[in-house]
Amino acid sequence: MGHSEEVVAFALTNWSGPRPYVFTKCGLRWDEQGYVHRNLTADSIRRECEDSLRRLNVDVIDLYQIHWPSDDLEEGWSAMAQLQKEGKVRWIGVSNFNIEEMRRAQAIAPITSLQPPYSLVRREVEQEVLPYCRSNGIGVVVYSPMASGLLTGAMTRARAASLPASDWRSRDGEFKEPKLSKNLALVGRLSAVGEHHGRPPGQVAIAWALRNPAVTGAIVGARNAKQVEGNVGAADLYLADEEIAEIEGKNEKEQELVTAA
Image (tube, rainbow, N blue to C red):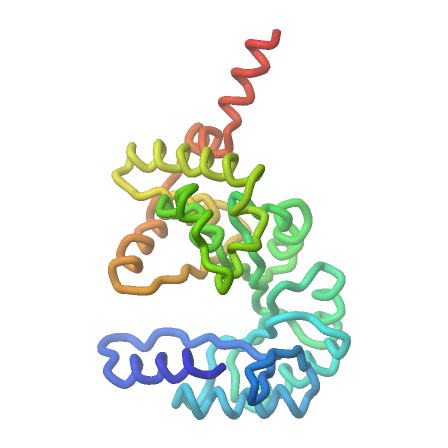
């Protein structure tokens, strides 16, 4: 609700070295009670942009993205394109859009980037969305490559069972049986591959997402500097084809077929 932008502004105040790109989003508004709703009307997006510029204390936002599609997609994307023409944002992108929604937006103005969920446990975008982005020159910045902590190696069966009700993961099927056992087995394979490289399983999970040629980058959450240092090495971690097969469990499936035969 704006706080993260203020934190980024504070960090930039004492930043040394080349200025990093600054990305933020629009399309989700909140009221005084904290209730969040989608809004892609032109007036709302313009107000959000002005508020973000003020909180971030920058003259221009490098990449401005829509959080989620809604019925007023065309009005919202037209407003984004206008902000770009005015120089308030450099590039404009979308998040969680399907191909049909991206086509509707592209009829108005080019899309710089798509931000979809993508991980070893959420691979829906592989079939159509990622190939579409690659063929249309749309950058892809994936989110949750470690599946909200599930693939970090820190999530155990006991920890998953003790997640508080206030944590949305306590209601997520991936953190419950029968999927939990399958996901923990996946973490075991990530750990095995990581041991060959001296890397933690979460870093291997990020590298797996980055190895897709359609993926430009990955958003990785971190609560402290140590976590950042533990994840950033994924950018230069190369996974061989046989390691990809091991991670995805293909070797085990082939062995099962041989045994069955």
